[in-house]
Length: 463
Image 1 (cartoon, rainbow, N blue to C red):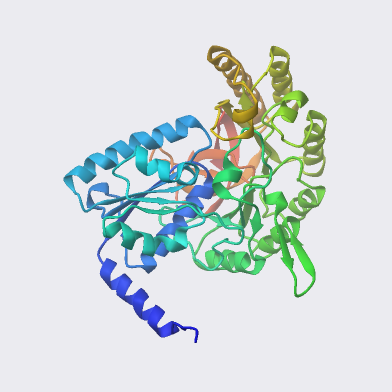
Image 2 (cartoon, rainbow, N blue to C red):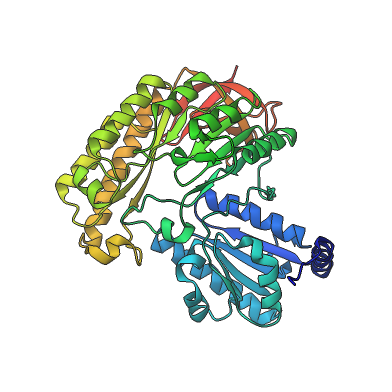
């Protein structure tokens, strides 16, 4: 006869675990992308359900989690530097548990414990439900490791705890994983295959955020354009454009953003949906990575320069007021001076509002690491990156100058770092705008007329 565990027994065990952990404090530090921030909010929710509270004071912590990024080597080196600080604390407080979670944990797995001896837990992005059991194992003196990837896990039923939120903006994870397999990227190996989250759970989360006073949500996915929920019972599918529209209809005062779009998959249907709703913010992050079709093919990006240019043209035609940002990698394998010039021409032609710019960093076990030689000298990478940064700085200033005299609705996020007499917020185009404080407060919508600009910021007066 099969043994059946009573739900009451499970609930009793959960209650025991919660009581056992009552008073224990978690310190969590997050590196990398917005997806990692959203994951940390899931982790905090799970830990609080098991009796832990959070602390901003590392010396008060009983458990330290560092949520990690593996996208570039310098990100991992920063994390290893922080681990040295945590390990010094552990030597004075032996009962302290240290856990590495997220992408670096998934990439290195058991090797991480071998390299960083005082680490107690190594937990991949799909194993957070197992945290209570893993902590119990670590408390017994054993190393606790779970880096199993899942084809189904979306954490749809877990309500994130916005422990470090500004109380105005929140992230909603709509899908996990990535199937694009770009030759330089570790994400498919650290976050697994693409899977979309039930749209009803997403809408329920967004509605609750409105109830809780949030004014803006950002829908997150490695490639939001590939969001595709199949309702097998109804025989229907739910696209990203459909989801975006449903979230926008929840409340006209709720701003809706999303990240990240993939050039090959971004459709005019999404652009037309953005145009239809005022509260869908007019900003698209569309990573190009290179302006050279030859390099794009080597990167396995799945589109040409011509295709990318056509997407930029569509955005500007359908959404003329839309801001566009991008990512650029310089110095990828075999990149020539001519390839570099094509990237510079892309910056000029696209007229980006803002760009994240990086030197190529070879990542272990990627297709590029296995098949290509990282043959662009470091000094050449650096000089090309400097040239890209200098050009984009000039472009950003010129683009921002066009905003002088215009009025934007700004959602107030907080007090300016430079002056207590000034507030800052963002426009629909995701541009930071600074203005006099007056009687405005965080969460207010304020109309600001731009009077001057820098390459990164708009400055104005309320009207």
